Length: 264
Image (cartoon, rainbow, N blue to C red; front, side, top):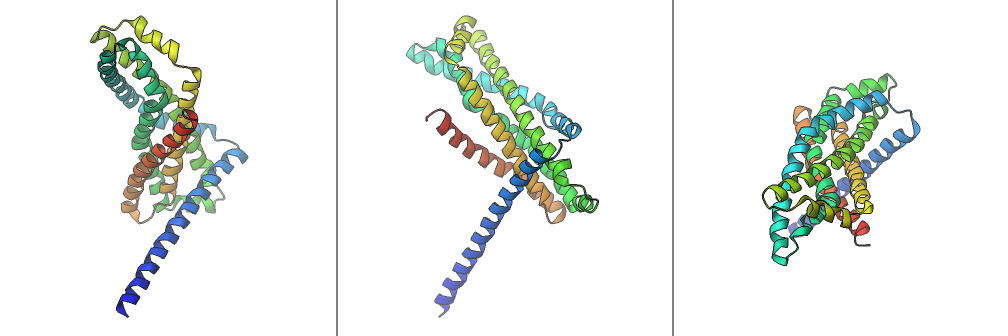
């Protein structure tokens, strides 16, 4: 009898957890639907969007320049030493640029922005939630999605898109600096390979990824901040969940889009 009751309790517990997860996923999807509906059906708050772009994008430029330059430099070193074994060192620029434009640029840039700006947004909205500021806006008949969530979403998408372009450009020149300065590869060989083998389609696909990743970061950070609970501890938890969930979704989305764009 005890064994039967234990099995029943176990099944009941698993069922409750499963139901909670499904409800959370539904709530997560509805939240995105509200954001998109707000963007498409209400006038945009341009001042809020510009302010958020400054907060997300401009303030992240230093970090992006630093990370991208060293990413390109490391790629240049590693790829050159591998290609030289096959007598193809002249293709260093091609491989560096394709690696950055197709994969590393959008993914690494998005992860950096998620860690810096996404967590900050989740914390900011979390503080607003636990201090009842969203409830006050609702009482005054002001839509939090229009005044806060939608501008953040649009600013994040725009910022990640632009930062990814900068990341790619700086990373390519970082690879060139190492290739020409330390490995004695001529600029003609480095940039000639880029001109010959990197197509506009590669650039467009990489930037499409950046748009999607920016939307994911904004979606996750706003959701975790908007539904924050349990005071200061909840704010910290929302910030941590934003980084973890954003990273997972970015990598999953990257795999799906890569399989469609480059292997279809």
